[in-house]
Amino acid sequence: MQVVTHKTGWLEVICGPMFSGKSEELIKRIRRAQIAKRRSQIFKHGIDARYDATDIVSHSQQSMPGTAVARAKDILELVDDRTELVAIDEGQFFGDGIVEVANRLANQGKRVIVAGLDLDYRGRSFGPMPALLCSAEYVTKQLAICMTCGDPANFTQRLTGSTDQIVVGAAETYEARCRRHFEPPAEEEEPAGASAGTGS
Ligand code: ADP
Image 1 (cartoon, helix red, strand yellow):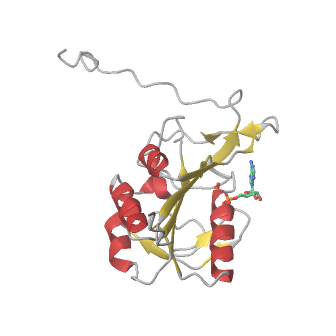
Image 2 (cartoon, rainbow, N blue to C red):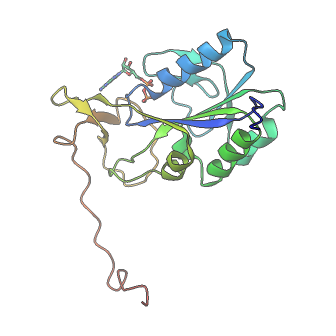
């Protein structure tokens, strides 16, 4: 006989470039869960204080009160046993620890939603996002609008010359671009010997 406990948790990931509506989608899902009277807790990485130090705020100024944390494991310490929905924005800023934290919370029977950039400004996968996507039961990939041609945009174009992977900014620093108009920075030359084989 199959025992259905209705206590199974799961992981949802919302990904896409900047301006694709990830935060709006996250806020929408939290609002609907709150209408259903589900207990929810909302987190974002402390590095992202663009619009507010703690709240989740979308580029369209929708917002939701939250808690800023510095490390993924802080989320585990702050989540109440009774919480049914754990929402995490800017998932790409967390280290790989966020993958274990998200899975652990889902294994406890909670609904976990992580929103984050899947690609960085070079068009390469961003931090823990690939592993989160593989662990997720539900994946939503969003696209923005290309600021050059108006087509759907999968990439985030950095408008400044910095080569740091993390440069927090909004419309003054980044814009959405489609595949045709995305211009990744020139690849840095690998130092001599850096691409030497793995020994096999
Ligand atoms: P994300 O979390 O993916 O960065 P947000 O949810 O914060 O996105 O913001 C989405 C909103 O950004 C859109 O509803 C729209 O009002 C605004 N916006 C600004 N530039 C663009 C763009 N190039 N494409 C789509 N939406 C944009």
